[in-house]
Length: 187
Image (cartoon, rainbow, N blue to C red):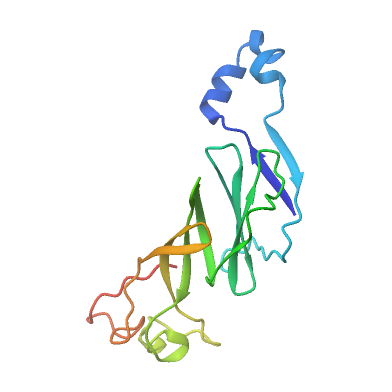
């Protein structure tokens, strides 16, 4: 797997600094700003650029100069720590987060926050309630419904999780028609 680690410089600062002839041959612009590093993360990495089946690999910088990397592997998102040279930190074990998929990672010195999905609460077809309430034809085969969560880990322990969608056992997704109660969903 290849990681594209961009050093801490904003696009605006880079363009402003490197746009004059005096600075392009020496100083800030003389050094490469992108480093490509191959890292064995010790697990299979599922990735896809397909719009519907998108599986991302996310990297977030740490104040110490290292970073955390997150990727889907089976039924979990795995988060690993890298040092400033993009090498795995052996003293930091892989953290497995039970998510169906994820979309973002924030890292700090104590842990990380992930935005991802877990099975929706409720019943019916694939935790979706009644898919016939959808406008048009229900998906065939049925596509499972998920709830979106923001989850905080300190070290390897989940500290808190905030549910961002509104399914429940009494009001699963697709349980009402256009005149029913509102259910917040994120695709």
